[in-house]
Length: 197
Image (cartoon, rainbow, N blue to C red; front, side):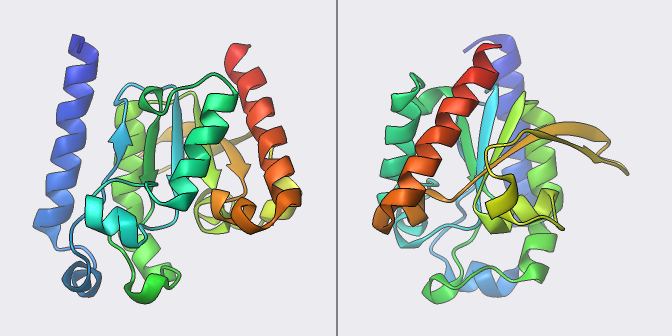
């Protein structure tokens, strides 16, 4: 691991420790088995963001390891990217009980830590998977209208960064819907074109 990667990895470990020390979403923390912080290359050019961990993720402590994760890995392979080259995380770092959607308050509590992850990694593209993560960056837009389109987003305040957001449907929708699977593949092909330019 090179020096920059090591520094970024240390920063990410500190952010993870900060979440645990700050007692974010204590009710969620009580019902979850563990924190599911993030996984992958700390110096990645692409970061994928989902909404919250599911049952498998909660058990293993790694995001996107269930059926959706398997599909995400397949889509990545289809465009010549190994999962180890990217960074994968969720907005909310604890599994909501019964796989319910994360609440707006839960997302807001975790958002500063997600921003800190992004500020550390400095990706060239942030892929938001599904409406929850997309709405954190593009709150007034429907994913059905903006998926597969690169949009620059400025985050002000102490964070002060510009991000290239690339919304996609969540891989879970492609498990049962072949049309969505085709749309997702098309969006991954667009992502490959963006990354090679």
